[in-house]
Length: 173
Image (tube, rainbow, N blue to C red; front, side):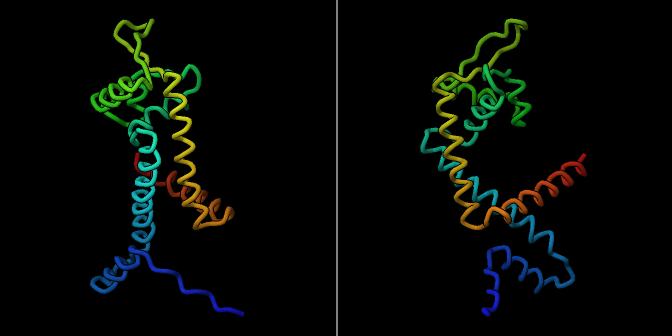
């Protein structure tokens, strides 16, 4: 019978060890979790950015296109709805929309029910691109996940992160 392997060390372990040396009175267990979540989010963000870059867009542009795609046919939202969903200022949203419109990935048109309003709609080119980008992003995520966890452990992790997220977001308000 083989003995269990010692867990591999990651950069968060080094940080925890340093704190244990200089402040042994601290309970750093929360830092172990959130430090890893933070580093993982950054690393996966970089991978996603690379996947989208092969298609000529960045993560910000992907977010706009994906939000329109998820809205369902006719893939149309107002700039205000997009800003609220993506938690962007109207100025930040305008810059993204300008870039995507120049690339013919979406179009802006007047809102027939509000003279001051606009509609933002995916073009056929935008729809094709975002569908390819979603596939590329999911492939990068799946590759990272399956390299580290089997389906059961992946499901457990998703469950635990959901619980942590729901509790954290609820306690924020």
